[in-house]
Image (cartoon, each protein chain N blue to C red):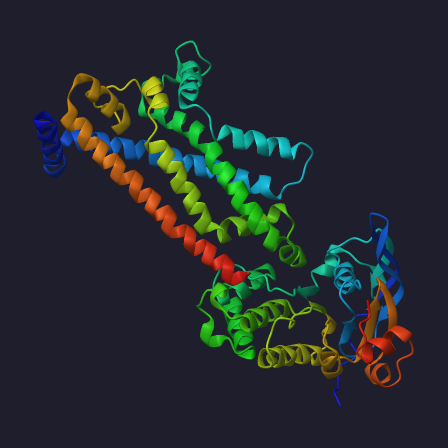
Amino acid sequence: MRDFMHISPRIEATGLRIGRNGASLLNVAHLVLDGPGPTLILGPNGAGKSLLLRCLHGLIVPDEGRITMEGVPLSTTHRARQAMVFQKPVLLRRSVMANLTYVLRRQGLGWRARRLRAVQLLEEGGLAAKARQSAQSLSGGEAQRLAILRALAIEPEILFLDEPTSALDPSATQAIEGLILAAARRGTRIVMVTHDIGQARRLGADIVLMNGGQVAEQARVGTFFTDPQSAAARRYLAGALVI
Amino acid sequence: MQDFSQEFMSAIGLILSGDSDLWEIVLLSLRVSLLAVVIAALIGMPLGAALAVARFPGRRAVVILLNALMGLPPVVVGLLVYLCLSRSGPLGVLQLLYTPTAMIIAQVVLVTPIITALTRQTIETLDAEYAEQLRSLGISRLASVPTLLWDARLALLTAFLAGFGRAIAEVGAVIMVGGNINHVTRVMTTTIALETSKGNLALALALGAILIFIAVTVTAVVSLLAPQERASEMRHA
């Protein structure tokens, strides 16, 4: 149905543990993100989804455990090849265009090349008409689109997304899903947290279900939705409140 | 009452006629205070921003001290600057006492803590929003300072104007280190104090009116900018 290039880097996490005040917040024995297409991380609130995403991106250092990219321990060099989009878009208090040229300048692009690339990205995201506007004046959906375009501007090998559409209406969600799928087709590994089972079906190639800080199940999308192996996954898909 | 109304009319006359003495004093006041605030901003804004993003032992104590320094008594600052610049002081050799430069130094000492503390607060709030995103982009905490300063520019302009308001209205420190010398170090506040004591109310009233106009304008600009900042933050929330 969807053809994804299988060139995205392999991420492997082993023995990840994060605890606070005696409570275990994250306890992931082994997780490999290697298959083609987007990985969607599902699970209830407090399941450790966002924490896992931040660990994989290197924003949080786990108390214990090891994360590797292509077999090499995660470092700041890796982060330069990754990008993350947050639930609430964090846009610079500058114009829409300047939000893109800011990261492009860090990529070492000259003034003209930055502008050209920014315009190209804005056209791709349907924001070209708003290039000169203040980023603060964008609607929620537009702001999140800009945040994704800015993340894609660095042509990341891995794009982490933390519930990017949780506050958006269906048409804004559709626009964002379009951008994510396009990036996935170009070979960017997508690792995305969502609450929305429908979204996981639409976008996911690989599903990871988190529960209580642990990976309850990891499976290809077809298997996960038709033949879930874990009790947590069966209850989650049946619409039960998994706490 | 008759006398006061006459003095008031004379004051208006002085302002409207473009009295050279009056405008010389006004321009010197503006020159001294603007220069002092620019210098204080050049020191205070990067310092305040660095303090906002840096994490080190004793940081909390530094922040408390900085906030306390916002309330430095101007007369004490005047005394300290006087001691430094006086003939036998450590900077006496520069012969700056009773010059506009001495007044600028005193105002810089007074205003720098204000701008630093306000910058620290502003940048800390913005950093709470930006920190994770900037780290994700591979920007270290200290390297994020220029980005934070630029993006907080509107709020920092209010810090700048607050500093200017404080400097232009200052009297105690500048009279001590400037000496209130006619045509040399006489500024609006020191002239008002002197002329009032001499009974020359017209000049004092004229300068008072201009000073009030400047202070009100500055406050109005600050209040006009502040809601924009808040609105932009609310849209962002």
